[in-house]
Length: 276
Image (spheres, rainbow, N blue to C red):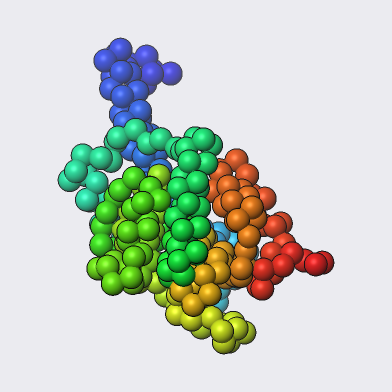
């Protein structure tokens, strides 16, 4: 009690300010990491820490020794694993954006965004213009964005159509959308190596499936051979999807309040629901 009685009001104020600043920094760091692959990596680190704690608690010597060996090189490993995120933090510090207020898309804004994409997809489908449009979700795809040409533009159907116009500088590769912006065009995506994918599918479709295998992104593909529109997510592809189903699925997956329902959507690899 004597310790607390010796604290003056200015010491109390300093402690409150100190805790408040640290808490705010941690909060902003969590917001910065959220929506990137670092979240999954942090979960993995948490599992390792929990395993180490259990091995210590139950005196599992071999497991504890293995965990200790892993933690010996933990700092270097963390720096290597989180290199893209650490670089992003430093970039935002340099731009003064780390403590800027973040905002989420409203449902009507998402609806407008989908409308613009659907207009562009309809136009390109009729003219059999190949296109690949990727929607970033919780898992960040910043490294894929950096492989293309930065744009950070407002989403409009006219811009999307111009990007994928044949023989234009950006028509090859993918457009990646984050939130309400076209972040980049001409992006290179990883190709799926799934041996069960139909041989009819070309590079564009395999790229759409590939990015959905390494992240939770959604991809809309327009075939330049048939004009068919396909939707890829969770390592699956819905081929020749109709407009109504495409709009419904995009709105369902991109609206934050209903994202959890995607796990029970029941779409199969070839575009039919389970039981159909």
